[in-house]
Amino acid sequence: MPEQSRFEAHFEECFGAMPLVAILRGIQPREAVAVGEALVAAGITILEVPLNSPDPLDSIARLARAVGDRASVGAGTVLEPEQVDAVFEAGGQIVVSPNCDAAVIRRTRARGMVSLPGCLTPSEAFAALKSGAHAVKLFPGELVTPGVAKAMAAVLPKKTRLLVVGGVSADSLKDWRGGPVQGFGIGSSLYKPGVTPDEVGRRARALTDAIRGFADPDGDARGLPKGGGQDGSEER
Image 1: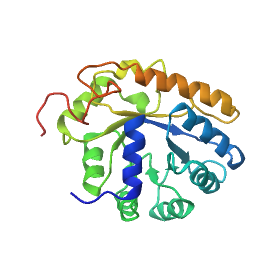
Image 2: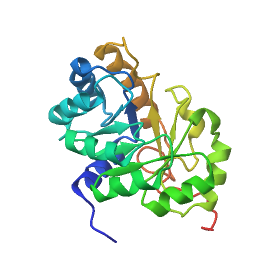
Image 3: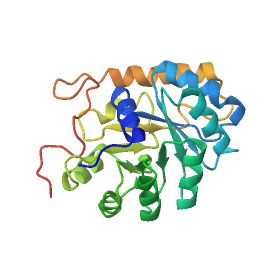
């Protein structure tokens, strides 16, 4: 097994502590640090700035400087390998995409960064894993049910990590209890332009409390499955 990069190790630490990705779409550089600090204080330590936000690389750079030792910071809506390079130069550690692009995944791995591509079908998920993705982002989450996630997990390699992104809130997290999904990307129910850092912190605490409420003796401390893609079926 290849040795983990420092970005991979940091992501694993952050994800293990709290499997939530804060999606900060539309954030402005001037508010990035205050929002980032509020999230980290509430226990969410994976922060994504989509590249279709205003001056996203500036926001990523500011977050990396301010909380990069306590949080895994990176970009979303990464569509081209050249964008991976720009995110790396800004101090980003993770690359999140809405789609499955092998060139983006390979460039991310070459940079020692964490790859989280978007997939909606088993074919896309297998292609992502073959290219080196660290996890499969089920997107858009509004189209994914717990049953769909379980069916996909049944055919994917057993250690595949699944995250649902889209349509997730503190109230709906309970619907995923006991299934193969290990993490969640949270967007507008956590942050959108105009929401103050104090309010972001309050929403983040509601989400982290909901995750900690996943009490399941067969899972880990968060009540989530110990491995991705496991529902008792054999790997196929």
